[in-house]
Image (cartoon, rainbow, N blue to C red; front, side, top):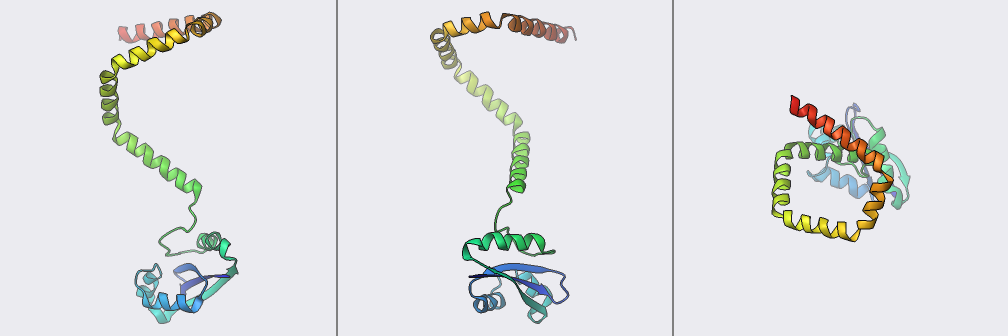
Length: 167
């Protein structure tokens, strides 16, 4: 059985949520260790001004989810980490980091792509020739079936580029 507990200042301003299978041992660790998130509370309020509250007892395999639940619903937690990552928040952060990285390295990526294309020009042309030869019939069938679409695409392309040249 796991105990989910909370350490809070007697004024209830800040809290720490944790879990343990041995509450007495864990209290001693909080009191004597300085590398735990609860150290912030101990430093700010003093050991004698902290109170321990048992929030719930749960099965060991539900420990992480229940601890995370209490971190989420308890205001002003000083926990340094989330026990169970929030997939939506983590995905948003990853996407934002990727966007920032792509923006910051846009020129570098374009230069790398240009160099790669230049260095592999012959290879790419040979691959294209082989593909066209191997798929000649499919390509002709596609062109015949989509003749109108292709003609319209080319007309629009010429029109756009004519406008760009005129500018």
